[in-house]
Image (cartoon, rainbow, N blue to C red; front, top):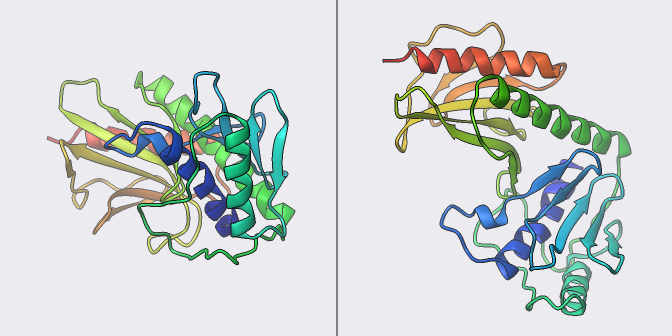
Length: 248
């Protein structure tokens, strides 16, 4: 279901590409997560606040508009979804919708690809994971007096925040939750430090109570999400931040 949701999220990303002004950092494509409604949401796409959303529980695309427009994805082909988006975007007075990604994904989706809702328990776990991490990030940022939006980036499908430290050091941190990859075979927390555009090396950092430091292609700390609570996640971020703050 993670792959199915990741692919479905690309319709929201391409709505941002189709209807919003392009930003150099691609932030016009990133998404919010509504914990209350368990869905991903685009930025407002027009002056009336219309958004395209992906409802996790219903496995459906939803427009936020005066008209109730939604499409259950189970059993639908990619071609059918694109046709529905073009038609409904026109109904809502939006410019022409196009499914046109400028990045590649780890799995393909041709016009005959068919969505399948196969495991409600997996979806419930993914909702719980997004919620836990969003709450942990908000708590961490508040405790450390740091400011950042918390957004989902459709390319890597991570929940992420990025903020400059307020200690005059010129350092910044990126942190959040990533989906399984070559680093960790599980959803996992990550945090990395930067000075300018350069990632800070971690090879000499003191070990963490939970998680580990990585100093390869990715330089930072990682911690598998399984079994974690919000408080443990906040502790992980705070402990890693303390190492970055003490780096000369």
